[in-house]
Length: 157
Image 1 (tube, one colour):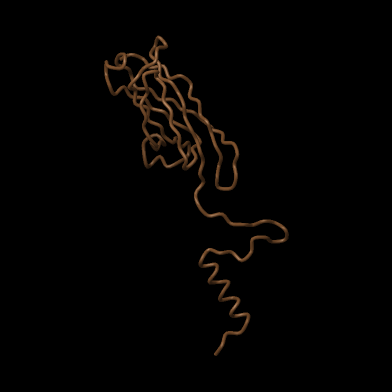
Image 2 (cartoon, helix red, strand yellow; image 1 turned 45 degrees about the horizontal axis):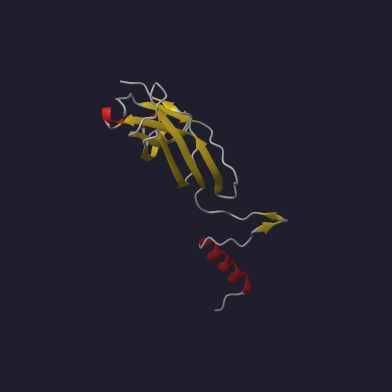
């Protein structure tokens, strides 16, 4: 027995819905297009690590992480998920670029991994850059942020 027209339309509408293809992108003049995916952003970080006298410190490990105020603290201690690690250069500077999940608060942890070789032994330090602002947002693309970290002054051990 052949399908009648209303049943055929209903079948195709159900098939398209199962495939994730919506039949209505505009209702009453309002664009209701559904977006699928994960938010992304472009962000970069630049900073400098200094000794107590203001001289650059080379060879310091800088761990960049996403700090969640109300987030998944179960995953890591202190609502923190590490993203990547970079080292300071001879001028004490570090930089990092990322295209991926946007961050709202950036946590930066420093560790002296070369001992006396980089200008002395230094204590670990942590700073938090809060409320990162993005520009040029469009849909799931949250935008771009250039994060300038204030100079990180380390204390000697």
